[in-house]
View 1 (cartoon, rainbow, N blue to C red):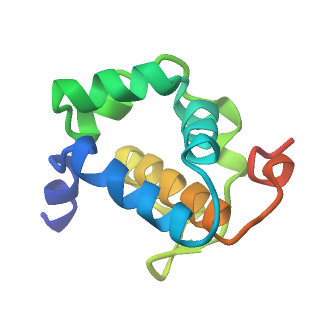
View 2: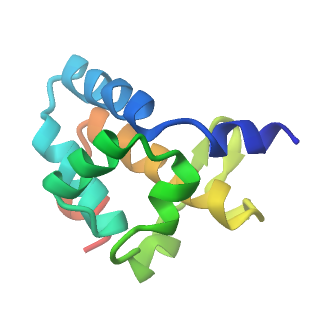
Length: 116
C-alpha cells in the first residue's frame, strides 16, 4: 500500500522541510511550532525530542501528548484530496498537519489556523 510508505517517514526528515516552507514565505519556526503544538500537544522541546529519537510519522502521532479534538474542524484540499474525506485515521492526521503548515506559509491569521 502506497500510504504505508509515508507512515514510516522520519519526522526528522519532514520537519526541516516544513521549516523551509514557512520561512521561505516569510514566516517563522515559532509559528510552525505553535500549530504543531495545537494539533498534537508537542511543545518545541517535545518536537526536538521526537526528532532526536528518529521517530517515524506513525510513532509521532501515536505518541502525541494531546491530539486536538478540534482537528476535525480542519477542512480543505491537500494533495488533491479533501482532508475531511480521508478514511485512514493516520493519513488524515498527517494531512491535517500538512494543511496547517500550508496555512501558515500562506499567511493565514493564526486565530483562523487554530480554529479559534
